[in-house]
Length: 398
Image 1 (cartoon, rainbow, N blue to C red):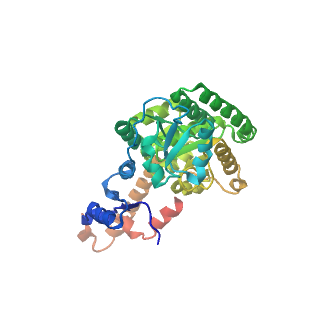
Image 2: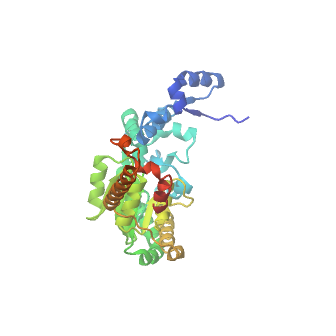
Image 3: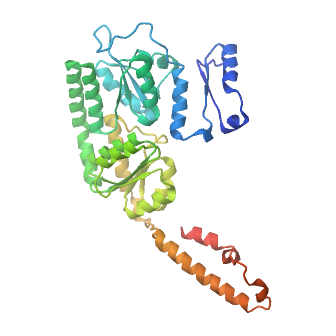
């Protein structure tokens, strides 16, 4: 029988409504089976996406053990090899496996990547790190701040997507450890890898240069790094939005995009569809739920979230991204698909009001001709109920 090193028990809405004592259940199970059984208070009605991240981080805290020997602040030595954690990287399609070798070449040990490519043992050692690198700030900054307060481990927010951000991540890490040798190795890696991938990046750039991109992400970190990535491909960002961004995030985004770029917060599908048409986007980069909005409008789509099957991080990952953008935008299928247009909302509303008024007048006129008209006087008429097929007609137009 399989014996896991740890069990996480997630509470659903039903559990929360009933009021089950999840902590007591987990405590009893942990004592019975002699393994950690950790409750994750994740009832859907309790909050938003950020609250879910916080609940997950609170659960992970219980696995992180205090080091037996207290770390001395500062850089590592030959005896004490520099150690880092990568927080907020979920190893989608093997992303982190393209990143770890870069740090290893610099002489840095990556203890754990949370939560992608992690084990119970590696998570328990996380407090041994000298530095935390936070990839997805929305999901793991909360844990990074806790580790800084609890264990004195500083953190830096970085990204491993695109040539510029990869370079910044490696050089910032080398700068933190204050090692000239490490910095030299990082610069050599950056020069060699950039020269290796630039022929393919240049080819794609010529193919997609001037095209317009729409970005809609869950968190602001991905959105910001995508702006740079599209700039490296010669593309213009015309729409950018997130679901969990804060005021300061949108301020930073506004400084990174051109005038005329539409910035949206937690937009609904109809709003996104309207913007795609108005801004004349050639490509939408988002999660799988937005795929169908783009396709129905004849707009190319690239999945940047957890359903993709190709690495996008690191140097080879950026080449993969560039190729996918090129293939999506320049696919022959778009020659056979008519781009659909959405009518301005104001015109639709005005047209509907006029039609409703005309329909109501016609109905009232017909009723007034009937013998029972006087009995109906003063009753509010709802002509929409006279046409059962009207809703279907509206849906077919949309």
